[in-house]
Length: 210
Image (cartoon, rainbow, N blue to C red; front, side):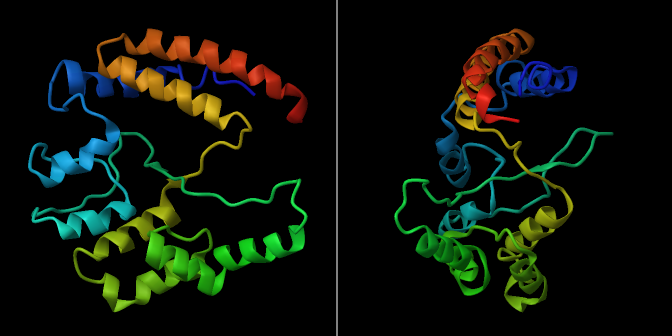
């Protein structure tokens, strides 16, 4: 389990060089916090932003005239849509493991999954609701069609996050690399530095990974 050779691979460096250029060379992206992106978009301060299906309610509430495209990718490269959402689990210290398991089953199957989708905007892990989105006329017209696009990407181009007990270590350090590159650091050096820190922090999990 390591990050060196992956987050600082030639393709990763290429992607982050493009990311750096958006801020520092082309200057088409403002140096703002990620959570401010949608507000900049709805107020007309930026022409586009990379969002997800959970952004739809805020977009619909605004007066912005917007459109939607599939997730971008490099010419000649593989189409890969990132995924990720809230997760549920059972603590090993729980005294109600059977009840907790039933609750998790409710949240991820059938009616419970529908509630998670309609209330929270979270696409389901199982395909039955994706099938309904494809057939339901509610999602045939824009802007609700955004959800159908998200469902299509979930089926065809979604790439799951790597399974690792050290995800938080990876996330915090790669986010710092994002910030450093945005603010002018050399992408290759920033990624190599992050890989060194991450792999050092991942050493504590060696006994937990087989």
